[in-house]
Length: 71
Image (cartoon, rainbow, N blue to C red; front, side, top):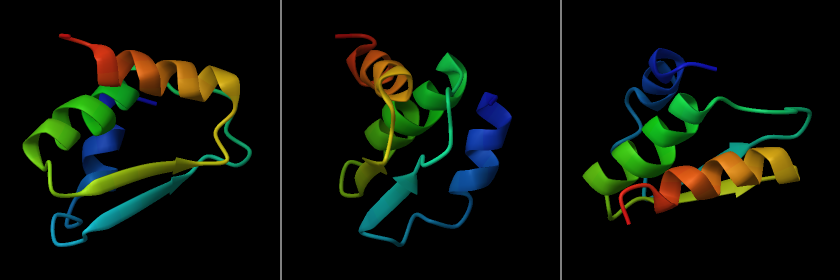
């Protein structure tokens, strides 16, 4: 999944206090997809709580890498 797909997924959700991403059945996500959601969007909207749900180890690895980028 690409950064552009993540941006489309996030369109119009800025008013939500919590966003749940259900990864059931998703084997992997790309680093740019994870980065756009869990670093770029998260840093731009610190008041929004992002929750990955049903993510396997590979998906969680990409999410963790994105969250820790720049630290």
